[in-house]
Image (spheres, rainbow over the protein chains, first blue to last red):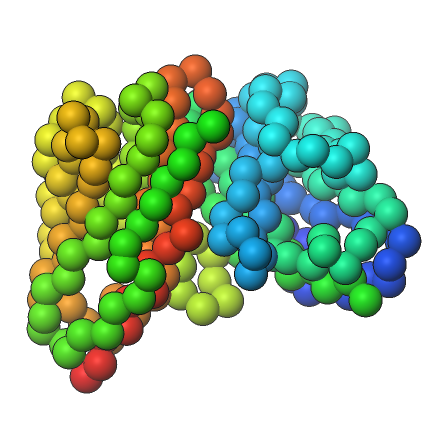
Length: 114
Length: 112
């Protein structure tokens, strides 16, 4: 019974389009994160949120925008998609910050940009 | 930023063997080191962690050693089983930052 739900599991998009990746966690955690995994960079940190506020951002491009409408939601909007954006995007969460508890990861959304 | 390196990149062993996965990091400010396991097409699964004020941690068949002076960790897995086949990731985080830096992974294959 997955406690971190990512939707959709698979996503195919055309270059230049916009997509939203959904993440919900039912663990009561206060911190949420996005990571990206591709052939070029195995696991790359993107964003961290704590109590719905952005804490860390290591994504150079403004085409990636996290959105937190509720405490247990952290969606990822990607605009002007490029083939290089093709990757698996993992959402994760932890009770508090990372140094208190290792984040738990969702099953990922596999994005292919044609 | 922090850089985490893992060696070897892949390992193939026979069931029952022990394996050692090495990990090194660059930033002395890193204080927390969780390890994860990822089976093909699956999510990352937390397996063991250690903090910089510890030297050793053991759970069942996993032993994690930490050397703060050399900035080096090693994960020892004993009595391997085919179900241990996966990619193992070392990671590091610094105090007051909610960022995990990952190594490139070690692909372990355990043959029956």
